[in-house]
Image (tube, rainbow, N blue to C red; front, side, top):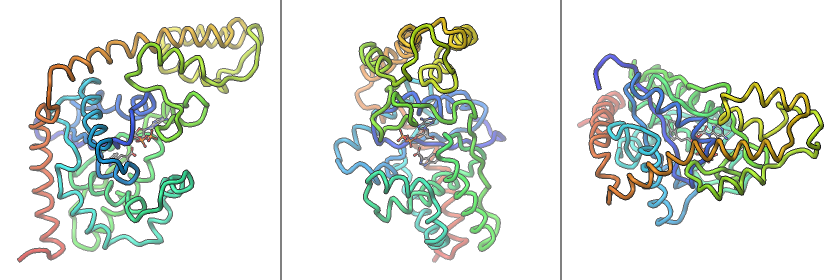
Length: 323
Ligand code: ADP
Ligand code: TRP
């Protein structure tokens, strides 16, 4: 990595099996931008601890996300597990002394998660402070995320400003990088695709899974020859991601009533299968060739540690944790 490039930081929680919403909403951007920026992409395993309480599952999921990252084409030098950088949790504590309970109470994601039944732990409430630490410790310029994470990046900006005002210029103000057209990928039930809604198409699904899941996508009851609304149909929303070259033709057929949902789904199955197939192969090969996947990213871990340590040294001095 050469100097002078802007900094990119992002992460995904290892809270379950990654899906095509994660890919199109965030991970694809990591791959596209990784060379243009100096990139720090991690597995947010401390964040996942707010929802995963089984140690074996958390450890297994963390390994899986590293494998997923490598399989989609991320460079090993850009990757690390969050927990390899203890300075991040240290910085989150300093931020805790800076932000107020009323301010954090405005975070929408927290409220949504509690409504969905997650226990309202202090960690879940404080999630944005840890995320701010991930971002600010690396001096991030851009943070590619899906729409639902935008508010968290704005919180990181506010925290950076507040810290800078109190202790002097220390942190850069980061910006979220969101792709409008894929801001929210719908799940097979038409709601936002999410690990916690059991409505996902896994990014490394088998051919059988793809078939079964696509066939179960909920549609309206319009018959084969009726005119259909591309904006209201989940199958078509997924065509936008997987059937780019035939999109105009499909839209025409929807409008004219010359395609039924069954045929539309069959086309989608074919296209998703030919997209996922090679990715799955690649992932299997990487898993076969490497007993310990954390060895592969050794340089990524060292690179991130070096940067975080330097920043924390500066922060400790600024706040008076020096002897
Ligand atoms: P999930 O809701 O499945 O638990 P996460 O909250 O772990 O997903 O999200 C990881 C990344 O993927 C975030 O940047 C998030 O914005 C993005 N993302 C998740 N679901 C979607 C979706 N359905 N459409 C677009 N982006 C998504
Ligand atoms: N909160 C993010 C999510 O649920 C994951 C995350 C943690 C993250 N720290 C981050 C994303 C820092 C971007 C930057 O998807």
